Image (cartoon, rainbow, N blue to C red; front, side, top):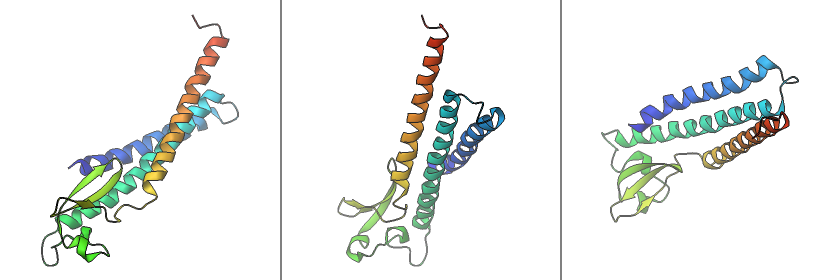
Length: 156
């Protein structure tokens, strides 16, 4: 159920963040923008990249969930849980979705679990790198704004 909400929200967030970042910088102009504005716009664009990659991973997980929920011939064990190790997937009895880190997890009859390769391996590290870079740019924008306020004599 959460997948149905997160994918459209992710798409809206991507366009909102990218629109803010590129639109603001385009309206003001790159040469006329001060450092704080450049950092804010960079944070928004990097945040859009992180959300876009996470949403891409959610689409992969959604496909795995659809495969797991599909009944009929050949649905036991679940197609999403089939890996090269037949001994492992032949014991699969259920699944769960972990959102951080994003992954589809198959649960086995003995209480264990394993993660098939449903989400591409680059998603987690790339989302983390983009999110970290966005946070650094956002922090730099805040520091730059504080410096500008102090230079103007607005600090108390």
